[in-house]
Image 1 (cartoon, rainbow, N blue to C red):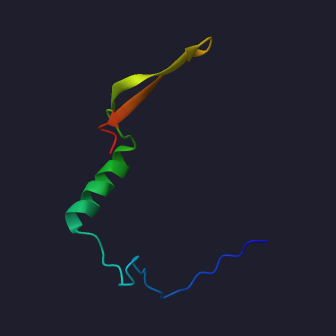
Image 2: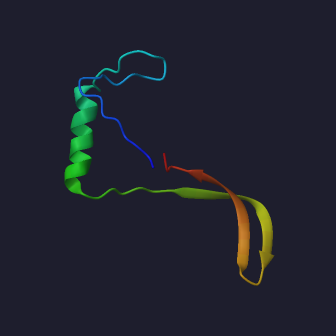
Image 3: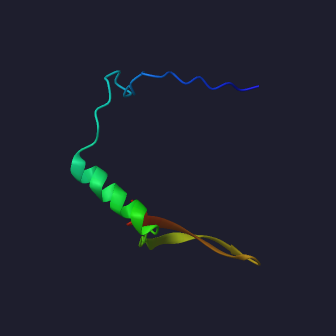
Amino acid sequence: MHNTTFLTGARTVTFGGQEAQRCPQELLQRYEELISEQRLTRTEHLRFQRLLGAGGQGTVFLTDRRGSD
């Protein structure tokens, strides 16, 4: 059985052991705009590097995935 412990009043600590600070207001405002739109559009571009294989189910390419981050 798994248990979850909630520590009220405890601060978030970063990987480096420092107390986490609130994000900048501009970042928070942009995040809230994205949430209120309830959709996220993203464009990805794949650049084919080389053919890895082909068969009865299809063709597989090694690709670079750009633009998704």
